[in-house]
Length: 429
Ligand SMILES: NC(=O)c1ccc[n+]([C@@H]2O[C@H](COP(=O)([O-])OP(=O)(O)OC[C@H]3O[C@@H](n4cnc5c(N)ncnc54)[C@H](OP(=O)(O)O)[C@@H]3O)[C@@H](O)[C@H]2O)c1
Image (cartoon, rainbow, N blue to C red; front, side, top):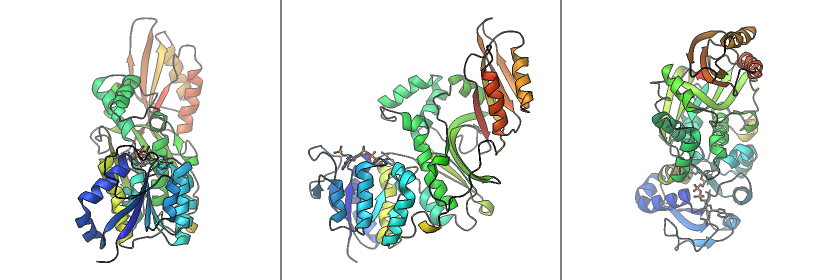
């Protein structure tokens, strides 16, 4: 057996702890698969006195993560997190010092992935990030190395377990978003500041990375249209069910005649299809690989063991000499692709209006929709006490997004409309 792969780990929290435990538990089998032992030699975290989920006393301790870059190791594993600060400084320093890097940091790569890929490739080193997208699901490798014969035309993913847990609980219990979010925080499924998750930003980071690998372009966070789940009500979820759909926060990246369309938004997914059936904190990705067909990946998108599984897969690849370009194509040939403007891809839409139960209100809404050439396929109206707001819910025929948005802007100005109209695309899954 050849010399061990010498590893430094920065960040000893959920994922770092999981990686150390798994390497201890499965060291012999992993060495056999990797062709050489995987040996942790140095670690770093903020607080040396903190009790850890794994025994780190036998490793060299560095209080400053960046010091790992100049230590005697082959690979630096960055599990600190954050798009700037210690994580970015360490990854750059490690690559400059000729170390391979493995990271779970989607925020860092979504922002700085192109420059870091160029640096890694200039140095002839790996920069691997399976753990950054969908936890344990091996989707990065699948897109980078497996689904390459015909390329990938579209990706649809449930990439944030917190959002999927909240939407699943809202449906199961009929409780509103704010209550279910509080439960998710108490259970540790949601951060104290949940903005990055529920606002869709975390999904956007992951989507930008998947789109880069699938389409051979630089990660392009700026062109990901973004909407979170904060405005989804239990009424929306109930109405979706009546129409035969479930609401999921999807990250969607697809090639269209007008360019690449990248968006994160709540979408109506037909009940009984694979994406609609993904419940709780699970993640999933549906890849449309042209003539090769559709492929569906599902599994745990977070947690110590699933994420450690992805980190270790990258380490085994590196141990075996599978370095390769970071995003599948050499960094210098990742070319920005034309982006489809909002409203180019037509879709059917679910629309909900909270209106005062007054004569003429339905005719007024229908009139504005007709002016923007939005035609209605079906409608539900639920009455309450006279004078109180009621919900009018419609499903449109396929319509350009811009037409629906134009009509909703006018309708929102009506004094009979109580709240911002809700608009959710119906996704063909
Ligand atoms: N958790 C998951 O399920 C999951 C899934 C996929 C990807 N990821 C990604 O994996 C990375 C790590 O996530 P995590 O959940 O393991 O985070 P975590 O539990 O919060 O752990 C972060 C670790 O980083 C250390 N750290 C923070 N600032 C540091 C600094 N300046 N120098 C050295 N160490 C520092 C902390 O040290 P102390 O312990 O001393 O405070 C802690 O050990 C993130 O990029 C995250 O997005 C996580």
